[in-house]
Image (cartoon, rainbow, N blue to C red; front, side, top):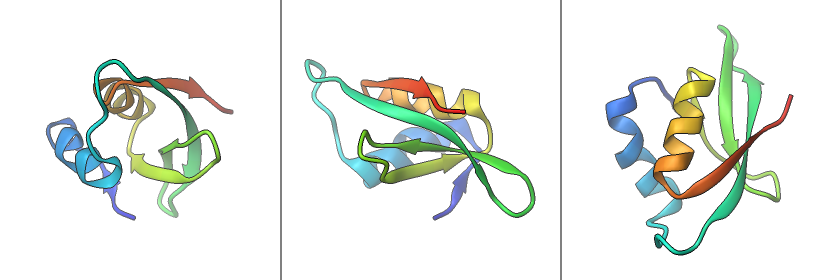
Length: 76
């Protein structure tokens, strides 16, 4: 899975990974740190723990989750 480090690409990348979410439906998602070898990335995960995307910063992960009508929660 590629690390997304450019916020302008986040909308397109997550649309491909999780599809379009309708505006009246909101899903809980978890943001958790993951080891990326050269540093820490931040994964956007489903309630069941499936990893949807990895971002270079926690802020990018939260921003992208919110843009897709998800409710992000941090896991440490």
